[in-house]
Length: 394
Ligand code: ADP
Image (cartoon, rainbow, N blue to C red; front, side, top):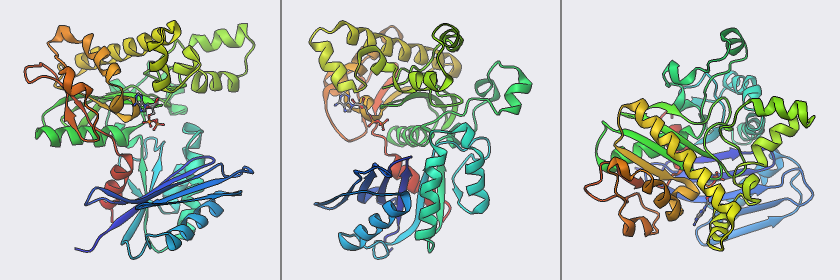
């Protein structure tokens, strides 16, 4: 069979990340990044095989950025048509109640993504910029939107509904949408495949800069920690995660802060960054080793929050078969995994310390054979997941 590939695009407000993926083989052929679009010092990096080509200079807008990327595919390779491109897959954070799976992008779908901007104000407008220029510049292949929220559209009402006034919630579409769904779906699917079992009660902990937990029963999500927006839930690099919403009223009344300032405070200046000054887990970890008390407390808060979600989701599912760690910190920080699992020993969970310390890019079990709960590390691969989902519509 000839190779079929998908160009996966993740368009941000001032960046475009891309990867050319062969979903059947599970491989990436080329990847790159356009940064600082609209600023004076733009930067483009394109990787193909052993070659990395970098371009510095202004990139006025997303259209210019993508044109330059397409020129790099021609110049450095691989030639997109020879590489068998059959679709472009676009990551879209907010799909609201409209999308419970991927969708071929036509005018109506593009309009729905636009209509959802108030629910995804940090992401959807930026995705639209990428979608608009990509559809124009690559009009000979279908474009597919893959939504971060789609996997969580099947949440039971009791998990998706906030105990907020019903009329207000309906009018303003306030409910739990979740996020990182593409990763939770991919990773929970990999766990089922790896253990060769579909009947699993799983908790997936996606611990990157953004962090979220999900509860998945037999392949279906039944709860997740992110809510109306990605702010809710776990402690993150720069986000508070769960906090009493009355903190907002208090800051408005006492500190006379504007809503936009509180938005920035909760979404960017809090979490690990707010507690320690650093949002990078590696830095926090090395400061703990040097005896830094702020970092130790931050880590304790981080693990305490994780522990509460694991307990809650175990109760929600009526049991627990697997806990899976994924994303930057989940895949790489063995201390974090050890600290959480130590707090769960009362359940009969036993971590294999040696396996936990192994560094690998492969999916692996890190608990002992007699552990009551199987603990795994499974690398997430959102680009591959998006490419695979796009292929289901081609
Ligand atoms: P995102 O995609 O949300 O930006 P990633 O999944 O790339 O984030 O994860 C970034 C986080 O992973 C950072 O906090 C980073 O410090 C952490 N991380 C990456 N490598 C390691 C490591 N070796 N040890 C501990 N944390 C790590």
